[in-house]
Image (cartoon, rainbow, N blue to C red; front, side):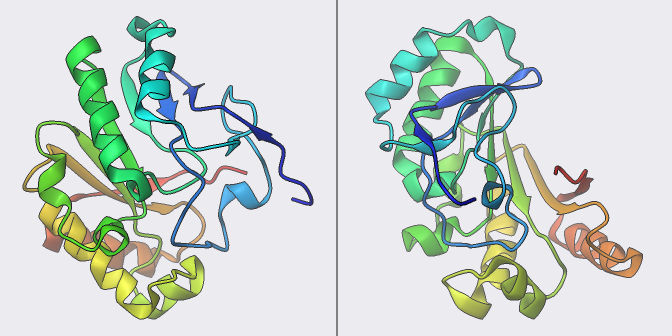
Length: 207
């Protein structure tokens, strides 16, 4: 994209779910990231934020919405939501308490490296589903694809986070994108997820 059009889109609809756009910060610069070629998703305006929303701004946005329409509230926007982990957890707890909604976090799985601590226990009682982008079954290829600022240790950190967070969250899913891996690589990912005791999902490519 030649120019980033900024707006203050902090919540937006995708299908029957409400998505929350907390930040544009991310420790990765993935070669396949959709935000390199577009500025919105679903029914949103630009997801490039004018500023990161405060917890109070998030609460007001939820209160102005018809929350009864949504099956799930998903923390996923144009950035890695665990870059603002404390705000994420506080906002998710508010939504669960006030509206009784299921909470999902879509993440790159690098929360522990981002926050410098074991973050998995913090999800307990607040988050129902964690969906983690696995992308590939190999550490070197993972770094090649994601260009993570944390380097080669990133892949192992993702697996460690997945294994730990399943102790505190009902559903943990590791995903790859359809058409981007060979059948052999997909089978390697499936075996890896089986070993970790989490679900493997191949999600459709979005252009």
